[in-house]
Image 1 (cartoon, rainbow, N blue to C red):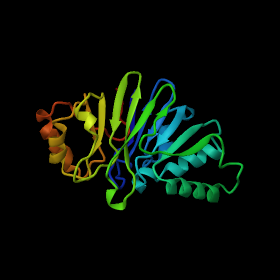
Image 2 (image 1 turned 30 degrees about the vertical axis):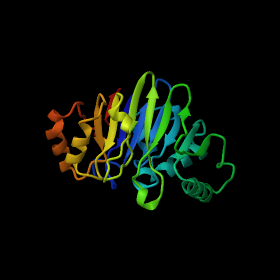
Image 3 (image 1 turned 120 degrees about the vertical axis):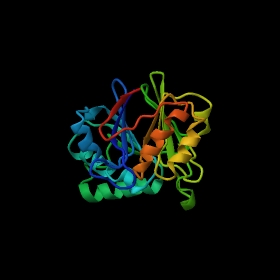
Length: 247
């Protein structure tokens, strides 16, 4: 499995960082987790075959995770008509909003809806599987105060396992307990909603073979995490926009 970080910033973009989006690739297919970066532009500039995209998974409906989803869907509907993929959103009102926006901007029912780009509701207990990739959502309490869903995603392919945390609850740093009970090959964890010291302390029980912090803010947290590396059981790497890691 190959991970390419299309965007690594926190809630707003920066001169050298788009908002969050990650591309996971298997031999034949591609999967996008969050769409806070200008996804389609990034795919083209990375030289990715856009027709290999099979699914998009949104962790939660904050704008820095979904802002460029509409552009990706729209251009697939009216121009790149060989693209076929599913889009998993965590809330029905997100599906309704995307549908209404596309109907308004495309203005022609021959473009959307169609049988190539399919909007689906993701929920706890749902599992995506296509023969090359299995994706399982795990709920977080990031939007607990609003009584709204948010998820992290476990990606499994070719014997490799990667967990992408999505945004977490700042009080609990509530990534799943299984990360302390069984190994994963990589753990992509956010670090915007709690102090870096608290994340480092929590990671002492993590069994990931590699930890990749993203969504980091303020940037001083990078120094704190680097200083804590010697106390942790797993190595850390620090993705920048455009970086790729073969897992």
